[in-house]
Image 1 (cartoon, rainbow, N blue to C red):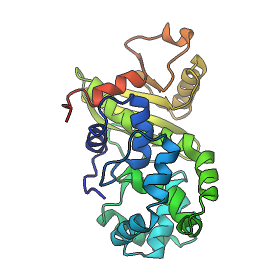
Image 2 (image 1 turned 135 degrees about the vertical axis):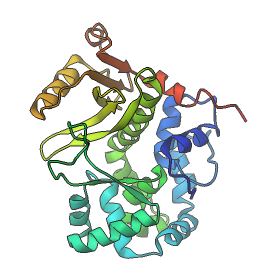
Image 3 (image 1 turned 90 degrees about the vertical axis):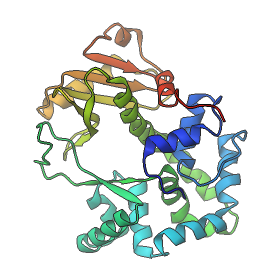
Image 4 (image 1 turned 60 degrees about the vertical axis):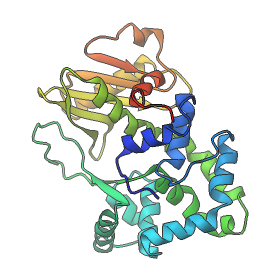
Length: 296
């Protein structure tokens, strides 16, 4: 595993393997293999790629992961709890069936090992104080680690024996939401690069016990940016903007700029609303994350 925990740099390094590849294919592969320490056979279809690079090489990859975690079942249980849940510490501890005390001690260790990072909800105040005392969330430092603990580690016995049917079913049921999360994380980097006149000072997500907002940011001048990301095969409609506006109202957030990021673009009605206070981004904009890279 690579030690670099900066997602943008991981993405750029990953992109260098196949700089002519369609950006959608790069993102989908990055969500699985990002942070992996060796190049992949890019030409293979993604399902075959997973089987060839991960499932068939389980033994060697397992040894690498075990070296990172010292093979401790408690750490593996917490990491699995984070990987496919809502990433809140409380939820992860519940999934792992451990007490809060045990869980928090394990999280401290995982942070020291650079396997996860702590994320706090972004609040509406400029002080960024977690006023609602919402659960902290945990973020994997590499996409590959998240993939491993979501789809491989929990059902390792079958994979170890060369039986991949359970894995394929598990992955098929969750792959859309799985990639959507990485798409959101990369959207933060996209916005950092695109807000040049009034740079982004802080960016992350907002949540409380009732509401989840994908993007919540503050600019240097103090403007509030909120946004939604969608990694689906349908265009985003105006209803998504209406939903976002209602969530802001419910959370008492006064947004200066709304941002929508969509894999497949936007409806004509939504595009007609584009303005300085409503910014729309699609996959093509993600090319800016790698535009300065030189081909090998």
